[in-house]
Length: 420
Image 1 (cartoon, one colour):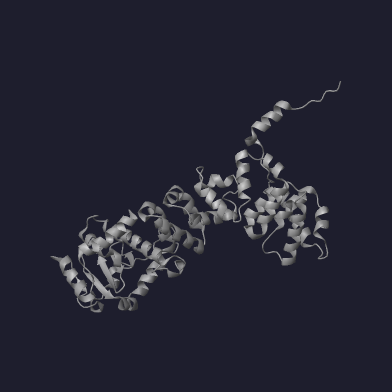
Image 2 (cartoon, one colour):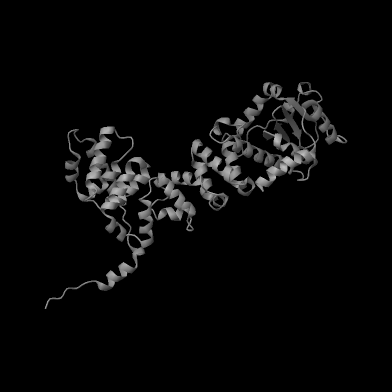
């Protein structure tokens, strides 16, 4: 009688504990594999133009064939790219392990238009063996994923609606943060995300906004401003301001953000700047309470002179207010630009420079902005007696401003309700 020894217990355990199986993934971070990949690349680039791709693939070892997709680069010459894609396609039926490699290359190169169909073909050719290495739930996910015509949008939606968290959900599709496609999935997801997501994934937003290009920052800013009440995402709003300032101050950094979003964000940040300036003394400061009613007209604010001077830009005038004792100067926009704006621009530019520890940019002094003879008619005002009433009279008479607090408060209340 002949006996055959079989690993029944081990096989049963492996069947019931699939989560402990080793994932299909070549470690290309090691020097050994990097060396093999570089050698394969040099061989590929030196192939004669008459070489057939199928012939070349047959000359390679199994491991080398599995590495071939890593040679793909969107910047390859057209003939090289065609040769390589044909070589990969012809090898798919025999190379089961190429599925995982193709997924990795897709995520690294982001060339969805070219590589997505190859990933699908590989899965179809080896679906049974590939599914064995996955949990049933993950296998079902991949089956649905591979039916998607727009893989980036599909992953964005799946990551957004998952209870597991965005990063964790994408990892079930082998997509991790260190892969370039992750960023594009995130950007696509932000188009459909609601306010709760921005709050929940604040750190993720901060990381990719800080590291992103200006185009990506504009896209991320536009989505956040559209979807969120800015007071609920104040930290993210301040980050946007830190990087992009406002449309008035840095117009080129906001050119792809919607006009309503630009205006809404600028209005919100000016409210914060105005409040922060006067709260150095008292949050109920009478000067803050006065200028607060004009917040909807305010276009930009610059704080200087050791946080003692406030430059307020409106559509028609620039107003210089002071935290301590001193008069208010009101200049026509054009005169201010001609006589003073270059000083303000230099101050703002110097503030953005990097200095050694303990070295700070020179402050723009209030005295450098004080020229009484350049102010508009009755544009030199002091905080004496019933100064609020006197200011209202001058602003209404000389600038035709609405100064009635009740009228202005109704407009402000509508904004407050949207940002609460």
